[in-house]
Length: 508
Image (tube, rainbow, N blue to C red; front, side):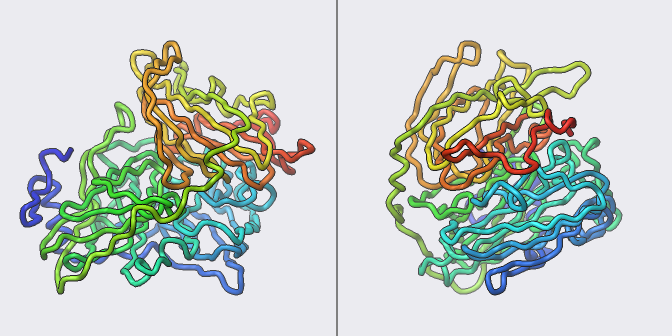
């Protein structure tokens, strides 16, 4: 629920501290900027060079020294392609740590020069990516960011991220295509003295109070809507650890796309819950009368020490002639038949952490941090099969010294939630069970402390070695990542160079 700075529904006025920030933002009328430069595919190929550098970039309307960026902009170019296109991208590493690229949510090969997170691109080196997007790829919002284990958190936090749009899908529905469309990249970063003399807070010094949340790189911009107007917003949470619980008082939401995939059933939540890495495509219908409201996020605690307060992210000005709202049916398509099985295997994985002296702690799946994984710990699945995984978050008091939310993310293949509930971390016993009715494909799902979730994964058509992990990126760097070998009928899986940390001799 909203706290002391709750928006007053009547007249869409604002009360409290965040309200004054809304009015200030509305008074400036700084329009929400685009997500960055746009690179579009041509003749089936999207080509370009992404150069990683550390230096000064414009953030929140002013220069910010010390951040990292692709091609000098705080959010990298937005890549716009169509199903069946190919990404031909050269990554130039001009920062002082090794890196690579992950194409978050894309259903593409995990091997070779594609979505291969085992690649190690040292400082000063270039690497050419060749990513073939299948012709039947779901259309929607995705993103890209570094994924070199041990350096992911710092690199993404400092600014290395960008969006990917696969054209088509829900955006092309006859009811949606005529609507005004907004792509919103919401993320935060540590900044002191916001304004002309602002300074970047390095990751090893960041605090909750120093975090500034930005919409497309702008601080509290303004979004304009007509009374009753429906717009299509595609929203990404590209933060390293912060959660959003979005609302626009007086407006309504209808979710029609999740994690890049059009939903086969729509739903109308009061708030949009978005853990790190999550994307949602939403029909947003403005209040019926002119006035001032806001895009806000409710307070949420990822853990006991990382609790972000309620905040205003953008002002929303409702003015001008009235428009007719647009809604879509609840059922858009039948659910995929493969949701009914058959299920080749069921696995149980625990998520947790272990204190170390000196800190930091180890985070892990099944008590094995990623840096200690050997071939014995790699999950082997056969391509073309479907599996059920039960994921249990053991980070809950009093069983654990850590009380943590963990957003689970898997590469290459999406999943669906079958059922979920609470369990006893001390014994593993299931305490409650609630059946889920899948409405869309997912690649990112929050698992709360003491919660278990059963997901169904179809390892459809790609062979290779890939990973699953917590998308609180500090947890991933500290070991909460597992490895999957998707093998063919002859048992072939991992590609050339897809080595485990224990095979390469380095864990960072």
